[in-house]
Length: 194
Image (cartoon, rainbow, N blue to C red; front, side):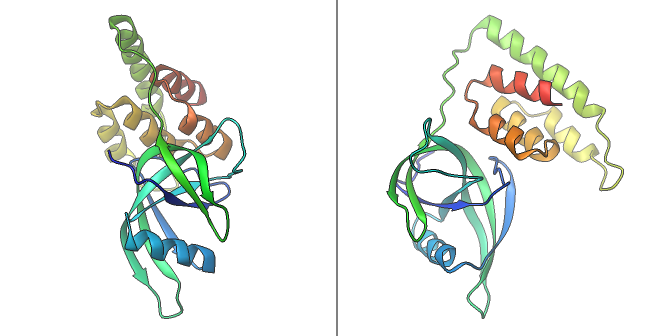
């Protein structure tokens, strides 16, 4: 995926935005209205971070999304749907006011694929699926469609992102899953959380 050289960053406390998820937003703050306008005139992308400190070490990880639809209201506010594309590190800040602009860097998986790691990952996926099968949702819609879809995913990063986005509620735990890079570590962490 070709990332834009720079993107606006919306800071939404308690919100961890995973790839493969849709995030409905109501934009009402003037600074984010400006950010949205610039995104629509450019790449149609911006990042969402649960918290962000431009001088934080290590760099923080956020979700980068593509504006799929946007409706501007007569009062200047906008309703939009942001589709999660990828996880990015936000290291180099080009602007801090009125909103953050950063150079996004993709979160690469440093883990090599070996026969042993493949077996380990498949075992972790199987254990996670067992736990997901036992999850029930008595207050909402049936989870059968979600569970069926997850069972057939081949991309293990997408597997973690979708399960975390659907079933993990604690923002700090979600952020840990978002920023962990090696897939085996992500799978182990998700299994531990479930």
